[in-house]
Image (cartoon, rainbow, N blue to C red; front, side):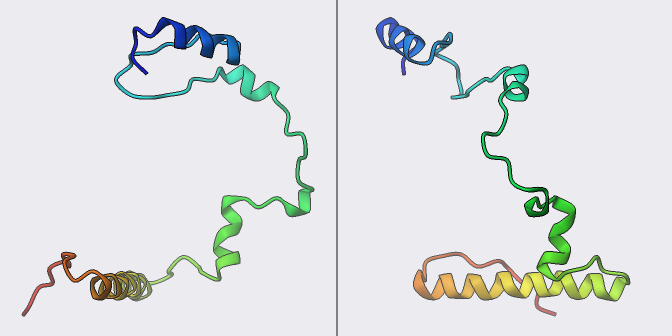
Length: 104
């Protein structure tokens, strides 16, 4: 929306009940932090259903590598997965560029 469209800005301010600022170089929505903290979740999950970021490794069946060899193998496995996915995309779209690999 153009920054000088006063009618549209007024309509949005009336609709949302907050000031609307237009003409910024990037679209954004600003919400005051106290509004976020004041808004309680209307249907919070039961504690046994809550998952935290620290739960993800065990749920995904992965663990932090304990040795340098394990770390290198994990990186290699990730690269191979990327390369295989790239080959599949390339077969569907032959114009895609593939990453360069060193040739010894």
